[in-house]
Image (cartoon, rainbow, N blue to C red; front, top):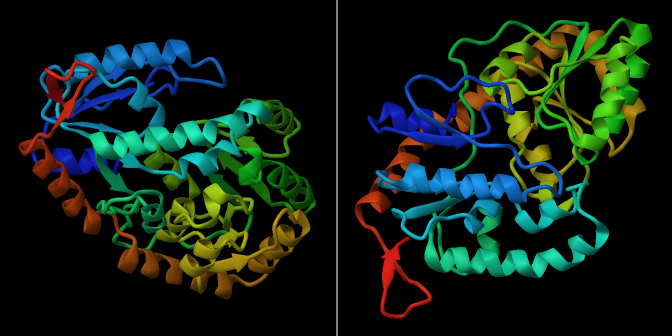
Length: 355
């Protein structure tokens, strides 16, 4: 909403947005046409997929182009549709490992099926990749439009000394268990933890219990721009991703968002994270809450260093990761594809439909 759709609106286009507004307790902005759908959760996804298929059919009726982000939506594409773009935003096969609702057998059976679906999508659709590392998954060349962020022009307020934040989806693979332990260890030091984002089902009871006991504040889903405003002024922003295929070679959007908003970063040492946050934060070992606490306390006790990290992070984000620098290319790709529709063959060889 705040990057791609905003770029399209600023370029003078009309946008229909299919999303689970009610589930996320979000009021759609007035400048878009909104179609509300249920949120797919766990293994119960059939109802949401049927609703998505119906919503896409309605949304495509007068559209010049269809853009989808979720691989599952490739199973719900209407037969009659405008030129269609799949925006690849994750390592789909690598992400299966971190989907806690999937049984073990599914995690071994699904990868070849996902690979075939990706190959079919490459033949029939246009693709945009959010990461250079995704190129190796596909046989053809596709444009890369990085998933950057808006960087405020003015440096945000300086980091404080009594609050640590996490912004994003909360799961075991993203360090939820470690963050709970960090909150417990920081409590005697008068430093609180704010968790801002939705959580996987198995994690929610632990977060609720921690919040009831006063260990932390969990805000649930908050729209991105508001969540980042909430993060400003924090002592540190956490990114404790585990070393898994889905995260190892991906650009850590969370880290560049912290940097953009003047929040010193504490991160596990994944390769891309290490490169991105050089000079803007602290690296800590995997699954080591005590090391995270030491890093937090060192920042608390050194105001000059945390201010320097915040300033360096904001400058680096402005120079390298400002979304408007990539927005024009994103819009240009969609405009070109919308004006040059391709065609694909359906099951009946004598008939073709727009793809």
